[in-house]
Image (tube, rainbow, N blue to C red):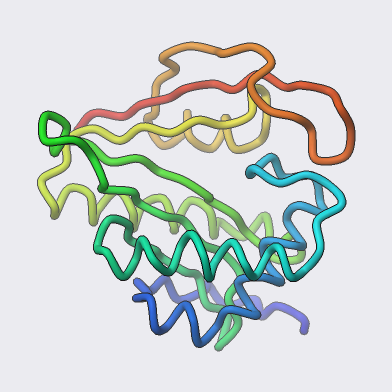
Length: 179
């Protein structure tokens, strides 16, 4: 399906809505990993594993109200997503963790990742969170995006994650934003 040129609609989806679109989420995750995204998965990465991630890890967290998911919809197709993890210890209720920001490879360079991040940040503020944290592959394009959104680098951890296609290990940059 060819993406439209209109900006996508950013929506918050609950567990049932994600379950109803589980194939779209699986396809998006699979496409991102196939494109080299460092989002936790390595090749071989079958579609069934991509769908299982959403069904077994994300949907239960959404049901438990420990995670919030925003999706970018191009017409009715999921083209991007980001998650705000709010499952923090009692002394950390002021912060949230950003995870699994991804945009379908055929829909990139349209500002979708930025829109998703702005929605997640706005919602974090509404929840009274004053600190966001995340990690990203060092020198990845996402690192540039996060810096442009006001995130700061806390440090770099070497050899943090394996490349999706090889045994090469990549560093990760730990970032934060206060507001």
